[in-house]
Image (spheres, rainbow, N blue to C red):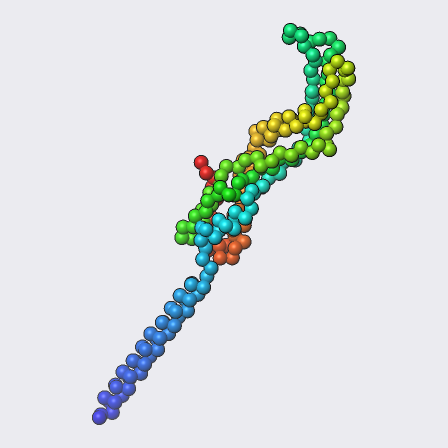
Amino acid sequence: MKLGESIRNTKKTITSILFLMLIIALIFFAGMKFADRNSEPEISSTALAQQLQEVNELAVLDYNYTKVGKFENSLKLNGWSIPLTKKSFLLTYAGRIQAGVDMSAMEVNVKGKKILVTLPEVRILNNVLDEKSIEVYDETKNIFNRINDYKTFATKQKERVEDEAIENGLLSEAATKAQSTIRKFLQMIPEIKDDYTIEVTFKK
């Protein structure tokens, strides 16, 4: 065999070995990448919904109030106030309103790298009157027209305070806070923080 032909055969052999090594390396790295991808925890709609629904009601906003209520009436006869029967007093009371969402009615959908959370409408979860806070001032006493149940009067005032809070944007503010709270909760999950976008909306 000539020297030139021998050199050419050697080069072909070396080239074949290098090509085979390259194929093996590609297969190896592809396998590693596939294994890494499969080892990542699966982000599913069911799993996320279960985590979020652990809190049955998400109270996202507290509204503390201190109010003054005025009571005034008199006994009437045929639509006319009877003299000397007027009864009146001022009453102060305090309480707390909580607004939030019912998490049991929430829906979660994962589409690709997007997480869509759909919440029910924000509502008043509770309105608690602190009975110990009730104080009565400027009371006119009248033996013909007695009202001793100040707690009942104060309790009736809760609805007025609730309507007032809603008119002042309580539910709207609570909705914004609910969206922010859920986003922050989901972003605490490492697999979600950098790889997923989160969208929180409300049912129409």
